[in-house]
Length: 132
Image (cartoon, rainbow, N blue to C red; front, side, top):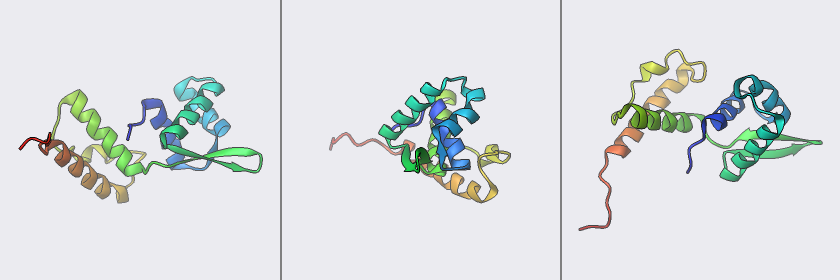
């Protein structure tokens, strides 16, 4: 599975907070953050749908979007990838760094800690290239 880009993550974060939302609602809330025109928001949502990140549902005469990616596994993978690529950290991230997050509540911290530990363990596992 592909990882969301930074703008896609902004859309997902808003959807995780309050969904479903129309393309117009998403655009109006994210325009100050992304600085995009409405057509860019719609095109990004279309691509996210193709990637399986969001689902589009017609409600009346409006298309509404819902996140298909689960919040905690997506955030854990994003954080672990960032730590590995940018800081060259291969172990689990300290969960304390998420303590004041507006995106992760206290109940989700334990789940995040488990997911980060699992991801770190997967990265340490030797890769089997079919060699005996």
